[in-house]
Image 1 (cartoon, rainbow, N blue to C red):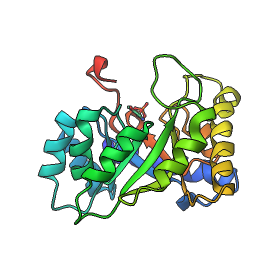
Image 2: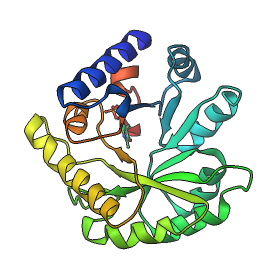
Image 3: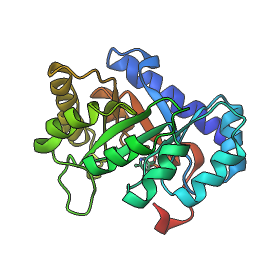
Amino acid sequence: MISEALTTIRQRIADTARQYNRFPESVQLLAVSKTRSIADIVTAIEQGQTRFGESYLQEAIPKIETLRDKLLEWHFIGPLQSNKTRIIAEQFDWLHSLCQLKHAQRLNAQRPEHLSPLNVCIQVNISEEAQKSGIHLNDLATLAQAIAELPRLRLRGLMTLPAPSQKFEQQRIPFRRMRIALQELQASGLILDTLSMGMTNDMEAAIAEGATLVRIGTGIFGERLNRQKQ
Ligand SMILES: *Cc1c(COP(=O)(O)O)cnc(C)c1O
């Protein structure tokens, strides 16, 4: 099941990229493995998947430790709190949900010397929903410039999780605003290469608007059973 689903998702990514005149390799696949077992992750690894996204540290750390000898990339995509920064700085390769300078400063101080700088994306609350984390576009440039100064972080780009919508053209609107925001930061001199956007239900719209990394859970591993853990 997982291996067939992975093949299907890879095909969807490649087809959509070509449809919008993009190279299929320009869109990376992050397998969102939150709530999934180590056995499920191993199945995906056997199909060549190397990037995994986790939202809950308590379940992520045993997975990372168990799979330490595989050459994997671990991405933290869940909400960030001050008391989590140290473990993220020590255990992860990427963080997608950075949206406060004080968290960036802690991560910068806590990133171990023997590791390369932590790759980070700034999470943007593009639909300006009260319950969602992420900064508003108005505050983005100032935060991005400040984070880019921190030597133990490497600012790679932007991440978003827009308000859900079922219509393709509607889905494209927030993703387009994200692409423009990234281009404005690039024009101001920042070297950025990542737009982390698109999930199982809106990945085509995200790719159409320039996503360089899509975060796919359900489309690879099936419905999440633990419904409160979404
Ligand atoms: C769970 C989650 C995903 C994956 O969503 P699916 O709909 O299962 O593909 C992507 N991004 C974030 C931030 C998530 O929390």
